Amino acid sequence: MEVDLRVEIGPLHLQNPVMPAAGTFGYGDEYMGIVDPRDFGALVTKSLSLDPTEGNPPPRLWEVPGGLINSIGLENIGVEAFIQQKLPFLRELGVPLIVSFFGQDPEDYARCAERLSEALGIAALEANLSCPNVKKGGMAFGSDPALTHRVVEGIKGATDLPLLVKLPPDPYHALELARAAQEAGAEALTLVNTLPALAVDPDRGRPRLGGITGGLSGPALKPVALRIVYQVSGALPIPVIGVGGIRDHRDAIEFVLAGATAVQVGTATFSDPRAIPKVIDGLRSYLREHGLSSLADIRGKLHEAQVEAPAEG
Image 1: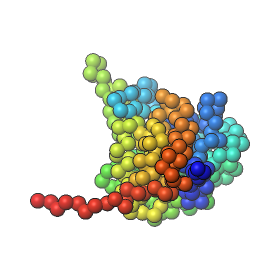
Image 2 (image 1 turned 45 degrees about the vertical axis):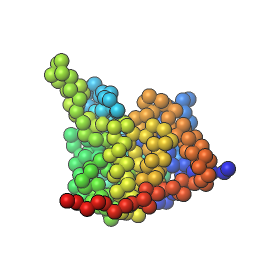
Image 3 (image 1 turned 30 degrees about the vertical axis):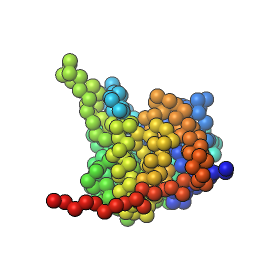
């Protein structure tokens, strides 16, 4: 049986719905010879800033039961170095390139988007409004609907490229934040980023990470991410990219059932660099086994199963 994995995210046309999460696949060239990014639905870079960023002091990673805490601090080579050193190779791959970026303030976000828009070969931008392990910017811009609207509106005024907005795993204000990003002009939402976390060394009485706190990713995050994807996709028409704890195609299917149009795989690639192509192959097999022609046949199916909540008291 022929199956069709193609999806559309706003104006983006992808051959399949699977891509790496920002910050987990480097700039793409590091994995060449291990996996072929041309098989992905899209390639997402690590987050860039206008100027190079050193990031947090080591240690930067700490494994915990069910996941990983990272305190990278958005280390990156800066937009200009990316355009000169990385982009020529990436645009030759022929796969849609989504560049993640961040700023120190709303104006910085706009300037960064404007500069990236001047370069050839970028299919879309992903504004990181939700990194929990940097001292400036980061999560602050994705935790206040008014500020989210201001930042996204400024970015849209500086670029004609499609814009994805990555938001935090806020269980109480997810819908308000998503609506603010949509109303300001975002073409899609990436839900969710890592969850603020802390690991402690009880013998030394010190934090495990050089940056003290970090962001929790991996399987422990998946139920939270699923709930937010389900909530937002059921209330808003904007496409959602689900991310958080996806290890295999069955995890990806859960996000599609919850309403996601596409998915990103992150922490899983650290233990298995071939996790993304395995997810893609698994999705094809799943559709064939269930007699389905495309993921659209099951997207958001959980919303059809809503039942009336029992009365309180």
